Image (tube, rainbow, N blue to C red; front, side, top):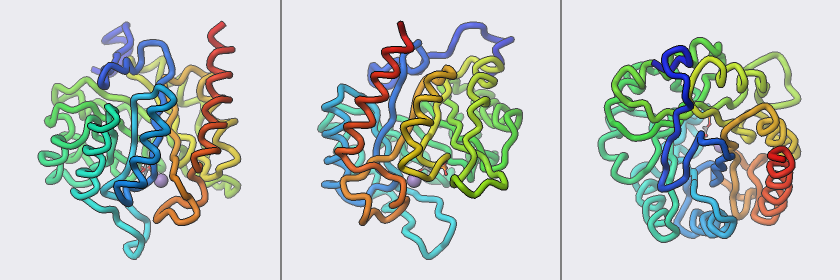
Length: 265
Ligand code: PEP
Ligand code: MN
């Protein structure tokens, strides 16, 4: 169902008026984790000021260590909803447990399925059944074909509002947190009709690489870019090393829009 052979036209996902996959670049910015109202609102104000529509923030955090901050859960989703309503934004948040989906869809506009759950087939089926748009991230060690099959699980339940997100894969290379597989973007665009995002934060794990990789994403035909922004990354409860503060975000956005506009000509 997700194959280009099955449907030649691009899938366009409407998120509160933002037409994802319609030809422009969609940007998803927001903190790694929801830590409190003020923190999310500060980022939302900056997103809004740029004329953007999409805000991210994790409430259920799939952390590598059980002793790390696990997220605020439903309270985090309540904060996201309040901010989304105030700033008229569409919010994207990861859900890790199928049992939370029913409640979560009342608070969020897009269900994110994280890299660690790309092959959690019960979660994929439940996300398909929930009927909300889904942002599906590529698994840490998933082949492109496995990634496509994961999307197929969601679509096989009658939910075609799926966005794919390349977020880097695990290789022997240690200079970056993961290895951004940039060629996955044109391959996914050829093989499927779904919009494709690149998450420059989790793929690189390095603030200094956010802009060059975002430029590369746009140049190879991505439909969107995701990056993490926090009002004070130094005190962030997760991903402190790679989130942008607001002035860095302003500069990043200015430069990436420049590249976007130049490539359009
Ligand atoms: C995230 O986007 O918050 C996240 C945890 O990313 P990933 O699942 O790609 O590691
Ligand atoms: Mn993060």
